[in-house]
Length: 360
Length: 95
Image 1 (tube, each protein chain N blue to C red):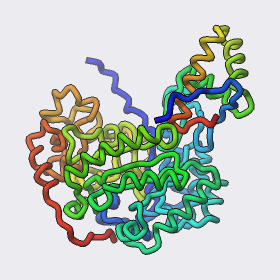
Image 2 (image 1 turned 180 degrees about the horizontal axis):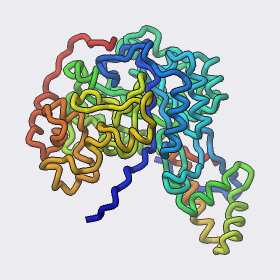
Image 3 (image 1 turned 180 degrees about the vertical axis):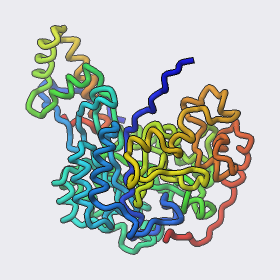
Image 4 (image 1 turned 45 degrees about the vertical axis):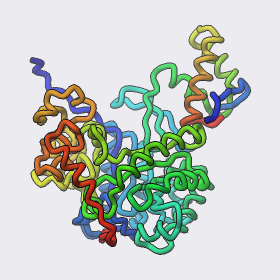
C-alpha cells in the first residue's frame, strides 16, 4: 500500500453566490429553501480575499451568481477583484437589476462572459414563470447591451413541463439575441424545484421529444451557436457525474461564506461546512469535513463500490440520493442498478397542474 | 449542417473577447479559458493559439511555426487549419 497521502485534485471553478436576494421568484430556483439574509452577506474585501485564495488553489473561472448578483451594490468592485486575482469572470444574471450603465462598468472591470436566464420563448409565459412582470423585455434589452460590448453571451433556458415543447423557439431566440451559446437545462429537483416537482415534471414523451429536438438543432446550427444540454435525470438509466465528482472540480461559496462542494449540499444534514470567515480556502478544500465526506470512492456502498463506472459518475448525486432514499451514501436512485430505482419512475408520474410555489 | 469550414491562408485568426489562453501551474500548463469551459492546450495547441493575435495571417503563422520547430510546412498547415476550424466551430476563434 502506498503510504504517501494523495493530494486532493485541484478545483477549476468557483461558484460565488454573492447574495440570495433576487427580484424573480422562479419555482425551480437552486437556492436553498432557507435563504441567507442581506445582513449575513460577505463584504467586498472578503470576496476579494476568497478570489485570490481561489486562484492560488488552481481555480481558473469564477461564476458570479446568486440570487441576482445585480442586487449587490458592490458588484463592479467584486468583479474587478476577481479579474485582478487572474480569474476568468462569468456573470450569471436574471438581467433584472443590471442596467446598461452597470454593464459598461462591468465590461471595463474585466468581465469575460455573461449568462442571462430566459424563462420561456414568449414574454407572457416567461414573465409568469419568473413571477415578475416585464422581466422578459429587460432580458432582451440587457442581451443587446452585452452583444454591443462584444462580450460573449450565453442564454440559459431552464426547461420543464410548461416550456419543454418550446426548445426550438428558445434556440431561435438565443440566435436572434446574438448568443454564442445556449444551455438547455432541464430542471434538477433540489431546493425550490423539489417543492414544485409535481408542477414542473415533464412527461416521458416530452423528454424523448426534447432530446431529439436538441440533436436536430445541434446539426442545423453547427458552427453558429453551441447548444449544451443538461439531461433530465428522472428519466435516465445512469446518474449524472454531479459537479464532476464531489470535491474534485468545483466549490461553492454561499452569501454568508460557507463553502459547499455543490450548491445543494446543505440539504444533507450530516455535513459540516467550514466558512471563509474562519478558514483559508485551500484548508477548506483539503480538510473540511464536508469535502472529505464523499471525495473519491471510499465512502461508497454497493452497487457503487464495485461498479466499473464508479470513477466516471462517482455514484451520481449525493443530494439526490439523500432526498429520495434518506441515505446520502446510497447510489443515486436515478441509476437503474439502485434498489430504489423504481421510485424515481413513480415520482416522475406524479404531475399536478397547480399554481407554482414561487421562491421567497 | 454546414460543410467543413475552409480556412483561407490570408485569414487573420484572433481569439474573440471572452476566450483567453493562460498558463496555470496548478492545472498543469496552458489552458484555453472560454464561457463555462476550460480546454487543456497541450504544447502544439498553445503554440498555435499564442500566434492568433489578429495581426498575423494563417500563412505567416505556419511559416513561423515551421521555422521555429524546424518542421515540414505542409504538415503544419494541415494541423493549423484543422485546429482553427475546430475552434471556430466552437465559437472559440474569429477568422
